[in-house]
Structure formats: C-alpha cells, structure tokens
Amino acid sequence: MPLQIIKADITTLKVDAIVNAANNSLLGGGGVDGAIHRAAGRGLLEECRRLNGCRTGEAKITGGYNLPAKYVIHTVGPVWRGGKSKEKELLQSCYREALKLAVANNCESVAFPLISAGAYGYPKDEALAVAVKTVGEFLLHNDISVYIALFEAKPRRTEAEILKEVSLFLGKDDFEIPLEKLSLLKFCNAPAAAVFNKNMRDEELERCLAYADESFSQMLLRKIDENGMTDAECYRAANVDRRLFSKIRGDKNYKPKKQTAVAFAVALKLTLDETEELLEKAGFALSPSQPFDIIVEYYISRGIYDICEINLSLYKFDQLLLGGANVA
Ligand code: AR6
Image 1 (cartoon, rainbow, N blue to C red):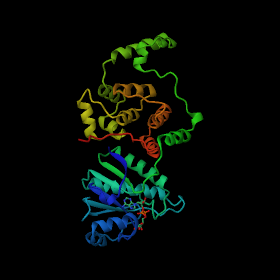
Image 2 (image 1 turned 180 degrees about the vertical axis):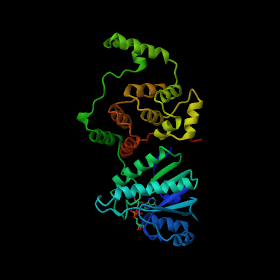
Image 3 (image 1 turned 60 degrees about the vertical axis):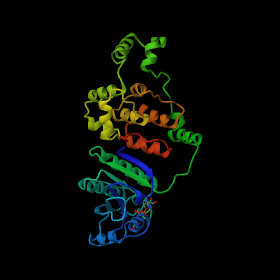
Image 4 (image 1 turned 135 degrees about the vertical axis):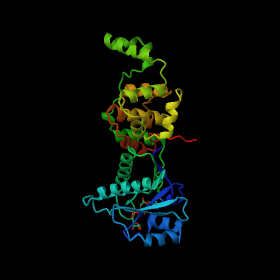
C-alpha cells in the first residue's frame, strides 16, 4: 500500500530510506535522532559533520551505515510555538523535501517518524494529520511506498468501545442510514421496485441486464473510463500500488480485499448505491454495525472523498486503512 501507518521502531525497518527528525546542527540529539545515530554508528555522525547543518523545513541525505535502511534523510521540523509561526507550512515542507530526496535517490520505500511531535512539541494528532495529508498529496504524482512509523502504542479498546466512540465522533443525531439502499440484485428481484416510477425502473432494469455478468474488475475499469481518469490517477487516488492495479486489470475475476474495493469507490467518487454495487461484485456489503463500514458509509453518503481524511478517521478507531498493495 503506498501509504501505511505502522507501529514500529524506525531504526529496525528494512526500507530504502528512513527519515530522521533532526535539529539544525545535524550532529545528533535525543528522541528518534539519538536512536538513529546509536543504531547507525560513528560513520553517520562523521558524514553529518560534513553537511554544515540543515535549515528548518529542509532535508539532507546520508548513508545508512549499520542500519537496515540504505539511506537516512535528515530533516528539521519546526518547534511548536502555538501554531501561528508557520509551524504547519514548515512541517509540510519537511515531508515534501524528504520525499523529493527519496525519489531523486531512486528509493522505492521510505519511512517517517512523526516529525516535531516529540521534543519539538507539535500536537500529535495534528502532526499525524499533516503527515498523512502531505504524503497523500505527494503520492498522487509519485509511485513510492511510504510508512509513517509511530513509536507509541495506542491504548487497546474493545470492539464495543470503538463502536460507541465512532457514533459519538460522527454525531449520532446527524447519522442516518438510507432506508432504501437499492442494490442491483434487490432491485431485480423485489416487487418493492414499484416505489420507483416507470422511467427509473426501465433505466435500472437496463443497467441491471447490461451489467449482470460484469465482474469487479470490469466494473472498475468501466468506471475509470466513464470518469475520464487515467489508470494511474485512479490507483494513486485509491492508495493502491501500481502492481496490484496491474494484477486487477489483468484478471477479470480478481477478488480484492474489502479495503481495496472501498478505496476504489472513494477514488472514483461513487455514490453510496454505486459503492454497494461495486462491493457486491467482490462479495462485500456495508454493515450498519461495523466501525469500518459505518465510517466509510458516513463519508461516502456525504460526498466526502478525501481518502486521507477517511484514513485518519479509520486509524483513529483502529480500523484497516483504505488502499492495497500487491503482496506476494
Ligand atoms: N522510532 C520511531 N519513532 C520514534 C523513535 C523511534 N526509534 N523514537 C522516538 N520516536 P523527537 P522532534 C518518536 O523528539 O519532536 C531531538 O533531540 C517520538 O515518539 O525524536 O522532531 C533532535 O535532535 C515522537 O513521536 O523529534 C531535535 O533536537 C517522534 O518520534 C529534537 O529532538 C518525534 O520525536 C527534534 O524533536
């Protein structure tokens, strides 16, 4: 999956590059900086000495020495001063500059810590939102795997606690599940179709017959064409990697994971009915009692197709994120 949020000690990750939340001197410090220098060994400090420091919001690259990663990209996040001193712009710049350096050095994978969210005091939730959105924008134009490695474990919650929090978060009063969810199959079989006028019936029926045998992959490709999107625009907007997309394109009967199918519905800005139709092709449905499904339905039914925002909400409630990768 192009963007993933994981729980990990960044010094242990086998990626092409890890990013260091450094200070202007680039000569080491505490937090993740200290951990990276300890794991990389003296060679890293020697190379850093030759770099003449780094300005806030900029980035510089070195070797990875004893780390499993080939490179370390050092960036300097802003110190949090209440939010009115360009902290957000500077933090966005850290992610962008580090990503540009990674691509310029042919990295296929890069891992970030939550820059500025430790000693520099940036509020963690906001720091994560900036990270996810800035990386998400970059991934609309680049094929690279990005991990946001969070160090601290979240408190564990039960399914019931999560469900309660989700409904509070989404505002229960404001939350309506459409009564008439018209799926293709239901429409074909049900006399309830009588509630719709004749023209709508005819149109639906035509659609029903024309696409009765259409598979998930075929419907996806048809919708991409109808939307006037390129394949790359679609899979990037869906947080799906190129290899998985090629696999789906090449296999008429490909059965995706649910979070991948939903990701495509979001990328294609499908209505709730169309989303259900696409999911049904892959054997899935949206349930009104599953946190993942409730969150997805909430956003799609309101026409909010910002995959970063949806993924931040899914992450907040310990759900799988939208997207997909070709894992052998
Ligand atoms: N792996 C992943 N994340 C980590 C690790 C780790 N091994 N260790 C800490 N974190 P911080 P900053 C998380 O303070 O706020 C240094 O002294 C940590 O939980 O490392 O940008 C520098 O030299 C937090 O969420 O970086 C600078 O002087 C995040 O990494 C200053 O601190 C960032 O915390 C930079 O402060």
